[in-house]
Length: 386
Figure 1 (spheres, rainbow, N blue to C red):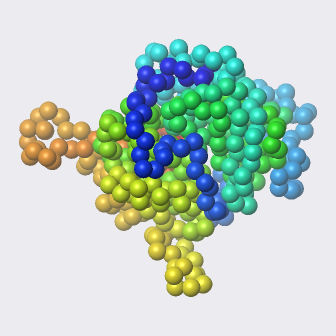
Figure 2 (figure 1 turned 60 degrees about the horizontal axis):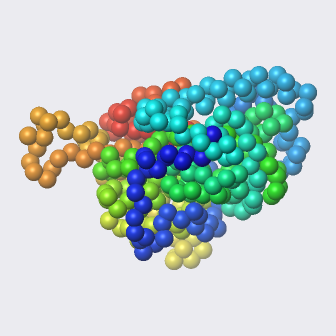
Figure 3 (figure 1 turned 90 degrees about the horizontal axis):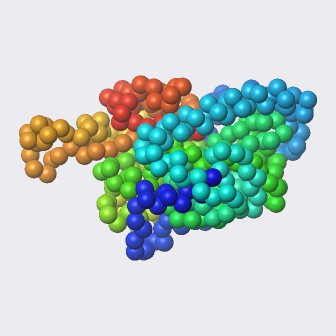
């Protein structure tokens, strides 16, 4: 079972509270809408399963497929489930030792080995198509930072992985998922038709990228590029880094959206950047600057799709992402040792492709797109699934 009682051995030490209470289980949501990228053709992702269904009305049970198809769907679902979860286990094994297999310790909690019904506690609308879903966990658990939780529509056996919004390195009895409703997204439509008190089938958590305090200490700088609900992958990492008393890691985050009103968690990010100016830099870009009703409401951020000009000098550059060898160190003047850094990307498929090229079957295809043109290599960039 997966309550992760032994994760503390990997997750570092929590120390004195800072001026801003971090990491908080959750902070107040900004009154913002959803992020859409590029064009009408690209804001709807590819269907996550092979099960298509008509969408006659938003948020109703009519989105479900007929039960007659569930037996054949189940075969496809089980195969996809095994492959997907197996891939995450493989990624985890690259960063964790064999003690990983000893982390299944809670017979009553959510598990990677089976689907567990979890009670939907509340739903908080964020925009017309996006809501924050809070769940009551069966037992308090440690949910690893940068981990995924699989959610299943049990009637048609479709599943989708989501990143918890404010996972911490402490036991937590609730969990939040930010879910956008897509017209062709079976699980997202199922979730937006759910009601508080309903039990939702879940499986996990499964680590995507090691982001705990002790894991982050290997990095000097971390650059992040987020789009859409992909910001949820980075909020726990930011909190983890900023509350690490052992090392001050430089963080830079570029968030892209279609309009200023469609930026997730902007208030929280701005507050963190103001509280930790020496560690965290945050920038925003919108596809097109809106017409402001008054001069004081004019958009003061960046405009346009993510490009090289926005990233140059903001995120760690390619030359600083390779640790110097012992021979090279002798040739570098004191104080100029190369810093170790990583670039993280999470967002809609078309955004990720534009910025760094597609993830591919193994999640780490050669770097292309904007970052490829800037000279980044495969070992210098990590693309999160979204």
